[in-house]
Amino acid sequence: MRRWSAVLLDRDGTVNVKAPEGEYVSGPAQLTLLPGTGRAVRRLREAGIPVYVVTNQRGVARGKLTMRDLDAVHERLVALLRAEGAELDGIYACVHEAGRCDCRKPLPGLLRQVARDHPGVDLTRSAMVGDAASDVAAGAAAGCTTVRLAATPDAAATVTVRALPDAVGWLLR
Image (cartoon, one colour):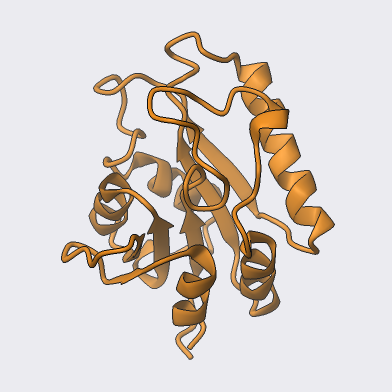
């Protein structure tokens, strides 16, 4: 088994149910974990691999939710995972509109921030897991192995699997 420095997870569509197109998970009651998420995160942590969420949340910039709302959503995410015996090592969110920063995926700034804040994280020995092409692009730009969650193969990703539990199976093989 390869020893991963960290696993970086997208949020919406990767660990929780994504809001309908054009809408945002703007309150804690709207956050629902995808099946198998808790167990998948727990398996990574049991293998000694730090797990971070890296998420674009431009709904804040658009006034669809406040930072307090986003914090409440993330508190619920942490609570739901804890209820399944799983812990995150951190949550990083880009709250900017597109083109206003270097942290909005597909740019790698958010992933690089994780590495700056946690010197033990080597992005070249880390994996970025997400359901969008922007997740794959950010991971690749940061030097990560990339795992795309999709029904059809993504040639840009290192590997494509259907869901987070499958990604974790691949990462831990």
